[in-house]
Length: 145
Image (cartoon, rainbow, N blue to C red; front, side, top):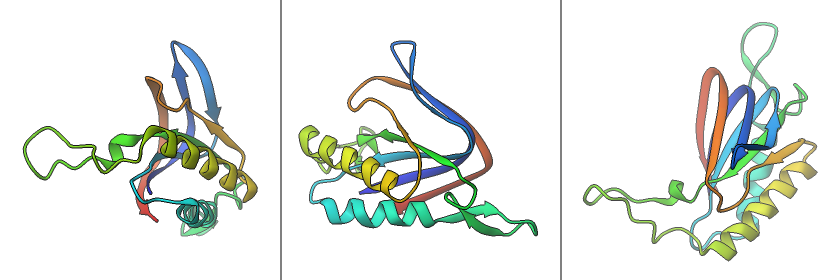
Protein backbone atom coordinates (compact mmCIF):
# COMPACT_ATOMS: atom_id res chain seq x y z
CA UNK A 1 0.00 0.00 0.00
CA UNK A 2 1.42 3.33 -1.04
CA UNK A 3 0.23 6.82 -0.14
CA UNK A 4 1.22 10.23 -1.43
CA UNK A 5 0.37 12.64 1.37
CA UNK A 6 0.14 16.35 0.62
CA UNK A 7 -0.36 18.91 3.35
CA UNK A 8 -3.06 21.28 2.15
CA UNK A 9 -5.01 24.37 3.10
CA UNK A 10 -8.02 22.98 1.24
CA UNK A 11 -8.87 20.27 -1.28
CA UNK A 12 -11.87 18.99 -3.18
CA UNK A 13 -12.65 16.24 -5.65
CA UNK A 14 -15.22 16.37 -8.43
CA UNK A 15 -16.88 13.61 -10.44
CA UNK A 16 -18.86 14.68 -13.50
CA UNK A 17 -18.56 18.34 -12.40
CA UNK A 18 -20.09 17.57 -8.98
CA UNK A 19 -18.10 17.99 -5.76
CA UNK A 20 -18.15 14.61 -4.01
CA UNK A 21 -15.65 15.39 -1.25
CA UNK A 22 -13.97 18.46 0.19
CA UNK A 23 -11.88 19.48 3.19
CA UNK A 24 -10.25 22.53 4.70
CA UNK A 25 -6.82 22.26 6.32
CA UNK A 26 -5.39 18.77 6.37
CA UNK A 27 -4.01 16.11 4.06
CA UNK A 28 -4.83 15.05 0.55
CA UNK A 29 -4.02 11.32 0.48
CA UNK A 30 -3.63 9.54 -2.85
CA UNK A 31 -3.83 5.81 -2.03
CA UNK A 32 -2.54 2.97 -4.20
CA UNK A 33 -3.30 -0.63 -3.29
CA UNK A 34 -0.89 -3.27 -4.59
CA UNK A 35 -1.20 -7.03 -4.94
CA UNK A 36 -0.48 -8.64 -1.59
CA UNK A 37 -1.67 -5.69 0.49
CA UNK A 38 -4.01 -6.56 3.34
CA UNK A 39 -5.91 -5.04 6.25
CA UNK A 40 -2.75 -4.97 8.36
CA UNK A 41 -1.21 -2.59 5.79
CA UNK A 42 -4.28 -0.35 6.00
CA UNK A 43 -4.15 -0.33 9.82
CA UNK A 44 -0.47 0.60 9.87
CA UNK A 45 -0.80 3.31 7.22
CA UNK A 46 -3.90 4.90 8.79
CA UNK A 47 -2.19 5.10 12.19
CA UNK A 48 0.95 6.56 10.63
CA UNK A 49 -0.92 9.24 8.70
CA UNK A 50 -3.08 10.26 11.68
CA UNK A 51 0.05 10.73 13.82
CA UNK A 52 2.34 12.19 11.12
CA UNK A 53 3.84 15.41 12.48
CA UNK A 54 4.21 17.73 9.49
CA UNK A 55 2.34 20.80 10.71
CA UNK A 56 4.35 23.64 12.23
CA UNK A 57 4.23 24.52 15.91
CA UNK A 58 4.68 28.07 17.30
CA UNK A 59 8.43 27.84 16.65
CA UNK A 60 7.93 26.78 13.04
CA UNK A 61 9.05 23.16 13.60
CA UNK A 62 7.22 20.12 12.25
CA UNK A 63 5.76 19.06 15.58
CA UNK A 64 1.99 18.86 15.10
CA UNK A 65 -0.12 16.05 13.70
CA UNK A 66 -3.34 16.09 11.74
CA UNK A 67 -5.23 15.44 14.97
CA UNK A 68 -3.35 18.25 16.78
CA UNK A 69 -4.48 20.84 14.22
CA UNK A 70 -7.97 19.30 13.97
CA UNK A 71 -7.42 18.73 10.26
CA UNK A 72 -9.21 16.45 7.84
CA UNK A 73 -8.15 14.04 5.13
CA UNK A 74 -9.35 13.79 1.55
CA UNK A 75 -8.64 10.20 0.47
CA UNK A 76 -8.45 9.49 -3.26
CA UNK A 77 -7.98 6.01 -4.72
CA UNK A 78 -5.12 6.02 -7.24
CA UNK A 79 -4.06 2.70 -8.74
CA UNK A 80 -1.43 4.46 -10.88
CA UNK A 81 0.75 4.73 -7.76
CA UNK A 82 1.35 1.01 -8.29
CA UNK A 83 2.61 1.59 -11.81
CA UNK A 84 6.05 0.40 -12.89
CA UNK A 85 7.78 2.49 -15.57
CA UNK A 86 11.27 1.04 -15.24
CA UNK A 87 11.04 -0.58 -18.68
CA UNK A 88 9.90 1.38 -21.70
CA UNK A 89 7.73 4.46 -21.64
CA UNK A 90 4.34 2.97 -20.90
CA UNK A 91 3.86 2.00 -17.25
CA UNK A 92 2.70 -1.47 -16.32
CA UNK A 93 -0.01 -1.75 -13.71
CA UNK A 94 0.21 -5.50 -13.14
CA UNK A 95 1.35 -4.85 -9.57
CA UNK A 96 -1.91 -3.14 -8.65
CA UNK A 97 -4.51 -5.08 -6.70
CA UNK A 98 -7.69 -6.21 -8.48
CA UNK A 99 -10.42 -3.55 -8.45
CA UNK A 100 -12.58 -5.46 -5.94
CA UNK A 101 -9.68 -6.01 -3.51
CA UNK A 102 -8.41 -2.45 -3.96
CA UNK A 103 -11.86 -0.98 -3.31
CA UNK A 104 -12.24 -3.09 -0.16
CA UNK A 105 -8.87 -1.93 1.20
CA UNK A 106 -9.49 1.69 0.13
CA UNK A 107 -12.77 1.70 2.08
CA UNK A 108 -11.09 -0.03 5.04
CA UNK A 109 -8.27 2.51 5.06
CA UNK A 110 -10.69 5.46 5.03
CA UNK A 111 -12.72 3.92 7.88
CA UNK A 112 -9.57 3.19 9.90
CA UNK A 113 -8.30 6.74 9.45
CA UNK A 114 -11.67 8.05 10.60
CA UNK A 115 -11.43 5.79 13.67
CA UNK A 116 -8.12 7.52 14.45
CA UNK A 117 -10.14 10.72 15.04
CA UNK A 118 -9.60 12.24 11.60
CA UNK A 119 -12.61 13.50 9.62
CA UNK A 120 -12.40 11.83 6.19
CA UNK A 121 -13.83 12.87 2.83
CA UNK A 122 -13.45 10.58 -0.19
CA UNK A 123 -13.38 10.44 -3.90
CA UNK A 124 -15.30 7.80 -5.85
CA UNK A 125 -13.40 4.57 -6.38
CA UNK A 126 -12.72 3.91 -10.05
CA UNK A 127 -14.23 7.19 -11.23
CA UNK A 128 -12.64 9.78 -13.47
CA UNK A 129 -11.97 12.49 -10.87
CA UNK A 130 -10.76 16.07 -10.88
CA UNK A 131 -8.78 16.79 -7.73
CA UNK A 132 -8.14 20.39 -6.69
CA UNK A 133 -5.51 20.84 -3.99
CA UNK A 134 -4.28 24.07 -2.43
CA UNK A 135 -0.89 22.78 -1.25
CA UNK A 136 0.55 24.13 1.97
CA UNK A 137 4.32 24.45 1.78
CA UNK A 138 4.30 22.41 -0.37
CA UNK A 139 4.86 19.48 1.93
CA UNK A 140 4.55 16.09 0.20
CA UNK A 141 5.57 12.65 1.49
CA UNK A 142 5.44 9.17 0.03
CA UNK A 143 4.59 6.48 2.57
CA UNK A 144 4.46 2.70 2.14
CA UNK A 145 3.09 -0.05 4.35
